[in-house]
Structures are given as C-alpha cells and as structure tokens.
Image (cartoon, rainbow, N blue to C red; front, side):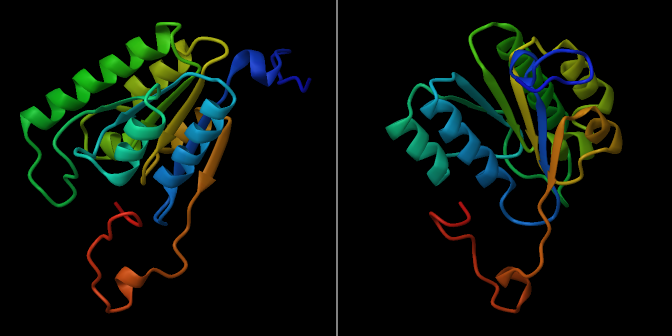
Length: 184
C-alpha cells in the first residue's frame, strides 16, 4: 500500500480533498464521490453551508441513499447580499455539528459543501478550518468544496482539484434560469 511522508498508508490516514474554482461541477464531483463511497459501504455525512432546500440531489439522496446524512446550515447563498448575525451563527453551529460528526466515529467520509464560500464570506475563519483538518481522525476522508479556497487550506490538503470555467451558457447571453435536475 502506498505510504505518505509520515510512513502511514493513505487509507489508514484518510485524505483531505478540495474541489474549488469558478467552474460548474464542484458539488457534482463531491456527490459522485459520495455515491462511490456509499457503494463501497462507507458511511457518509454531507454538510451544506450555502444551500438550503430540496435540491434534486437532496431529493435523490433521501429517496435512494437514505443512510447518507445531509444537513444544511443557513439560509442559502449570500453572494452580493447583506450578511447577518443569523448567517454567521448558522454557519458556526453547522461547523460545530460537522466537527462533531467527523470526531464521532460514525462516519468514514465528511463532505462540507461550499465551506470555502463560508470562509470567503467571513462566516468561518481559515484557522477554524485548519484546526478541523489538524484534528481529523485517522481513516476519515474530509472533502471541502466551494470557490475561493484559501491558500493556507489548499496547502493543508492532500488533493486539490480546480474546476475551471472554459465556457458557460449563463455567460453567453442566454440568461437561463437554473434548471431542475441540471443546475439544481
């Protein structure tokens, strides 16, 4: 089994993965990994920081993979909106729940969707996320998604994928609303 620079196998240690960048597909990549992990019998926890409501992926998880735990923290996207104390409190409470889930021994994979946005908006600090990475139990895979991943968090990760937008129909004058089953 491949060893890392600390002499541990990567499976024993578990990795920290980041999906970031301005392109479409970060959450989709995370959800594909959730599907793969569940197919392998791993227990999965997903916490969503900038999303609320029954997106189609949440409906599918509830219907077909009900043993994947999904929790949503907050009231939805806040880019270009006024940030309230309630937003910060929701993110902090959600982050606390995610850390508890990670340390509980109940889950093999912890996925924090849009956590990079939560840091970018000031709901959470870089230090909080770095501390979570530091206390991550051996064998737990930690997946962090969202645009604007901070350099310090990227440096602490084992795998970073940047999703780059080459062309997107939203920017081509079509002004499509988010389509159910495709974007939401």
